[in-house]
Image (cartoon, rainbow, N blue to C red; front, side, top):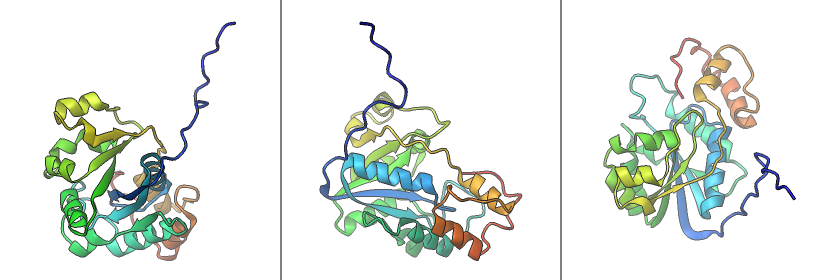
Length: 227
C-alpha cells in the first residue's frame, strides 16, 4: 500500500505539560496595544513548558524603540489587565512601570529573582533572539532564566545551532517552541484605529472598548509603522 504524505496542519498536537510548581513565564513588551498574538504566545508557553503562571510586564520606556512615541504606560497597563481577565494563570506586573526609565530585561529578571523567583522562563520571538547578543548583559540573562523562543512571521528561523555558535555551552538555556504564529502587528492595529477601522478579532473585546472609550491612537494616522 502506498503511504500518503501527511497533510499540512494535521499532525498530532501534544497535550499540555504537567505544571511545574513555582515556574514563571515572563512576557515583556511595549503592548501598544496588547493583542491576541501576545496572549496566544503566553498561553502556548504556559502549556508547553508547564508554567504555573505567566507575567505580562509592560515596559516603561522600551530601549529598542528610540524616538517612537509610545502610549502612556497607564493606558498600556490598563489594556493588559483587561486582556488577561478570566485567565487565572496570566497576571500583569507593573514593576517596570514602577521602576521607570529604560526597561532592561536583565533588571526585571534580577528583581523577580530578588523576590524569590527561582524557575524563570523569558518568552521572546525568534526575531528578538536574533538580536539578543546586543541586549544589556545577555549572559547574565541566561544565568537568571531560560529562554522560550516562539516563531515570528517573516523572521528567519533560528535553532540550537545558532545558540551553540553565539552562546557556546548555553544550549540548555534555550527552548524553541513550535508556535503559535499569529501575524498580528501592533502598527497595523494602531493605523486601523486611526483610520476609523474595526480592530475586532485583533484585540480582546475589552481592549477594543477601552481604545474606543479613551479615543486612543486617533491622532496617529501618520505614525511610522513599527510592531
